[in-house]
Length: 437
Image 1 (cartoon, helix red, strand yellow):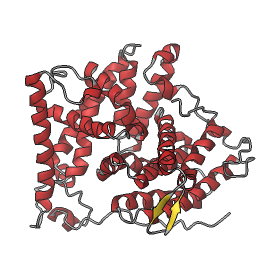
Image 2: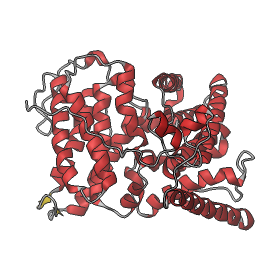
Image 3: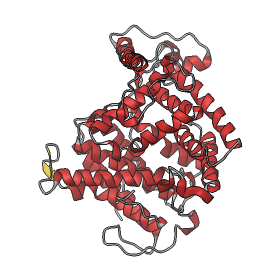
């Protein structure tokens, strides 16, 4: 087996324009404006050095988005004609007595979903493929609406670096958790899907592994209670499987010519699959040199694979270590806004990167089964399969010419690691997720 360098490189930019307090305390500033979160939490007066365009850039982005959303919502209110027809919204923007200023957060996510919908790329963007279902549940249950709004506000906080969005995210997350707890206490067939939907929205917003685990265990308990009517659930196609228990990770595997060898030992298969992923990500890193955002996530994915590969997979990792390693990937689609534009434009390297992103997380789910969140792996498998179909249909026999690698990459080469991750997962966990999902 080849030796892989486990050294982790930095994938983020240093904070060169942080506030005075963070620089004085020698801590990383998130550069939220007008007040960074460190100063907000510490109740300090936040002041930034005078720089050109930094403050104006974030302000213009935030105001531009806010103005468009408010104008669209006003038109919706006066005309009775809702935007985004594919979402089947009601004729009036009155959800749970929420103000138009609050509903602009819902409008923001709907706009992103619309971009993907119009470009026919929503189907391989994980939960974005199910966004209309989330919206319909949000129309009926206020705590689902709060969870979706909190997710949108959290995304805007990352993009615009404004404290207003950060405060909205925290406020609606609190409201969502309160409503979710009340719904769980009155659990029934009528609110079960809403509970699952809110749990999924909130799971990626938890930044502490203990809080995240509470949400995860609650979701698992809800799915267990739903078994008598699970086939009627909107989430049935994503919960109709049995997770692969940790104690079976040393069982034998049937030989498959398309998967890494060593069928007698799943641990060796996963180690080989990680090495394959590192090689594939190295190639993809060369192809993405023109996109700093894609290059950053590819390096992070590769370095994570290197770290896990360098350790013995039989060596125990604490839940906290597993969470810290895998959770940052949950925010990738939120942090790098250019990804939506590139995906909607049909950029093949972006689509291949997205498939690799899902594949790495699927592999980590197999390596660390204790932190596998219910519902998430099947939707990632579906996205990989959908992306592979698009890439294969686009490239056919010609291949994709890469000016950096100076070679034409075939679909089989670009998508081999993601599809091998799907095959190995099916073998190890006896799950049948395919194009029919």
